Length: 483
Image (tube, rainbow, N blue to C red; front, side):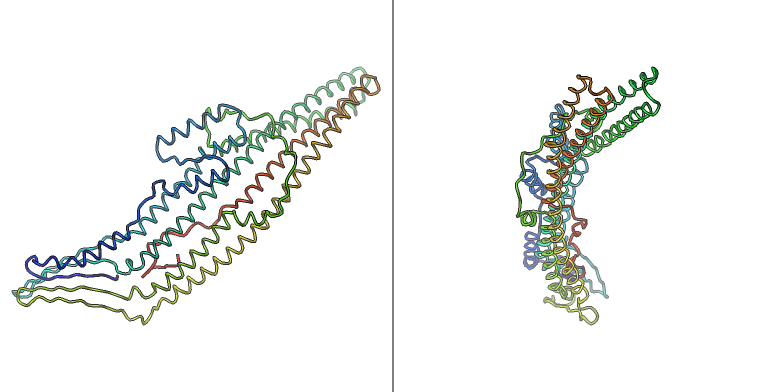
């Protein structure tokens, strides 16, 4: 290891300790410039700011019992009334335990960054040698010189890695918010669907019962009665499936909200929000996505970090070949020796070329990854925007055309039934068709709000599958600065 060594040799403690001041001053200066410290909020500020700016919500990091008590109180207040989409997102941001676990990545990474930015403790050596009547005492203080030289570059690299971790945690937080909003939409739509499926089954039961009675008096054929019974069986099956979907979507929402016990008894609104009156065109949506997507920003940051790491590798490829020492030897039979020495290891076998080549390969890989992320971002936001517009048009068509027409047909058939122009079975069949059209409108509205959540997420980005690189404590001499 590259060292600064001071090795006095004497029989008694030396009187000239002031001569150590130079070494102490150099070591102390390095320690002062190299000591990293923890931030007051653990690096949580950018995550809070993103939640405010992009979601309009609060996010808290449960780091103590007092923090958790405050979160529990806020969650209880939100669950005391019917849970809206915004309320569900807020509960998830406060109470989702997986999200709270991801916040710990900030503390873990910051600890690694602080550790990498601190100078290793100096080592002290002591030796006693005897030759005849001569006794030598040797003391040495060793400080890694290469680490001191590379410390500013390593600290900057670690700071960038911490920024990357903050971006990943922010992305995770935004993903949880988007998933919660979609889960809320599915849960509310499932409850609406169950209510309408129950109405269909009630109509089917009434029709089947009427068919049974009419068949008993000979006014209905076996085929007509079987058709009505078949419809009742299908209605019962569809209701069972709808109830299962209701339970599944609600449990999915409960998991994202991080609820258990009595908290799971929260109530949801009776119906989904109304469609917006109109949608504004967004011709610049690709530009907006590239400007604000966190995965695009993260890919650019990774490429820049790798480029700087490449410079560190090239700079430190020979540092581990340098050794500096300050010498002071004393003996009881000879005058005191003072001086200095420099040792250079001949780079006959390893000139650091392999490390540089690897760093260059990692840099080009990061460049291509960044380009791929930008291309995919453009495509994903176009796809999400097209799906959003299409879902809106379909939902609007159901709301403005199909459902009103079915309502009009139902009203006309009631008049015809009152005039004894049609029978009760025609009236029941029309009622079933009207209920089915309303159920299709609910599904179309659900698809629009899901598409809205997908578009919002496409404008933000998606979590990267590549975790941030590890601490750079081994970077520099003898290590791999390209990591």
